[in-house]
Length: 599
Image 1 (cartoon, one colour):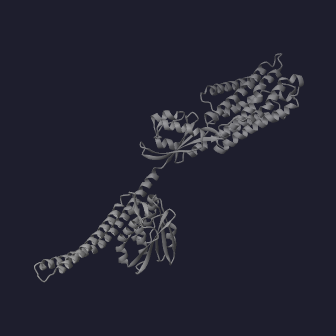
Image 2 (cartoon, helix red, strand yellow; image 1 turned 120 degrees about the vertical axis):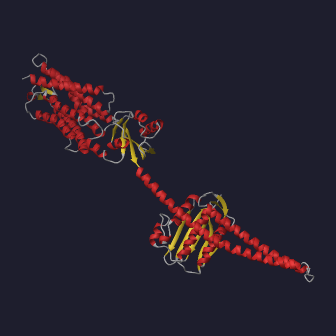
Image 3 (tube, rainbow, N blue to C red; image 1 turned 45 degrees about the vertical axis):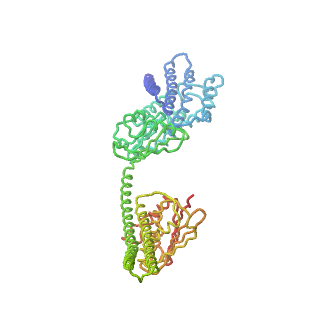
């Protein structure tokens, strides 16, 4: 019946040779493939020595000679198996000098096995049948250490596989069977169960067969487990994974569905870029980023528009690092198309609301024009009528002997008075037109110029006079600053902000008359502070909490909530200033506009 172990041994040897040829021929060898190849080499050396032992057992050659030769593979196989499990669980490890300590006992075992004839510490009496072998005192140390390495290696395999694929996944089941079988057989041999010495390497046949299914069928040596792949295939963001040679080693189904590109696995990212520029990025830029990402944990982020599929993406490029080892690169595509469309819709609606506020401001300006120009025009008309009467009187008095020179001078003096009044009224009209024109222009122009506090107050007074007079509200202006103090910015925009706050104070009185609004201007260090204070009822709590943060109004359907919202934005953006406020129910509200003084 010896042909059975021969046959099994030869089959196992052929399997080992096939695996060795396969892994050695692979051009791209990751750490796990190198570790697996070394483990196979150890098993191959062990197995071939025992095959020779079987073939030569009826010769004069001592069977223990082949046991010594097999020790090179048998004693170092547990260490290689431990590293294989560790690399499998971490994808990639960094060499540490402390790892050399793992080889102390295997090296000692090898030396003692080779010199066993002189001391018999390893084996006292050797037999090809395990149950007839008498082991030496050192063999216990060797066996415990060997099994410890196998147990730790199995622990790495099982923990990682179960964690990522599930205990009852096919990947985990094959790993469990492949690692448990040789361990159990060796334990049975140590407990005296009759079995030939070659049963140990032959038990690894099961291990190799199970691992072969895991490798070729269930992607055992891939970094991405099966269950994890199913999860990432269902997430909404696309991704691709590159190894340290910039070869595409993984991607999810979302990527394929989004970009409509075929299987890209094992292709160079730059070759793919030339054919399908789905990153919408220059190759040179991508090369620079992929080079930088190997030495940093920084995330490189780009906003891109893929015209071919009409989608917007935020592309994030990150290093994949484990225990300070660079494993590869993750390129993540966050689809922001809906967000961009929503933002555009919000922007369009905001533009409409702002346009509505601008039109409301124009309506207020037109009302101010009607009032502010009506009075001086009527005064000019009256002055013209007075001049007409004086001209008629002067014309009739030319040939009247009773009209003296003094009378002519009086008539001329009266004419001068009327001319001065007309001049005063036209200057006022010019100021009104200038102020109104400025406010109309500010709706589309954001030009920054220098202006004085005096000029600002004058424009506020002109533009608010009509509204204040109609509401029977008094605006009390107090300057605690030099009127010639200069500010820089869009004076028309600042006037609009102040006028809006005064209008809000007028409306806060809710129709009450003979009330006061205080407009104080002070200086504090390098800032000018404009304070608008009323003594109305104050702001409701819900409005106070949201003021300046969003568009909110106390005017119901008659308000847009844009006034203070836009005012705050204008002061922050165009003047590098700020607006603060205090309010108290039943007492009133005070706004402070702080503007830096022009240098």
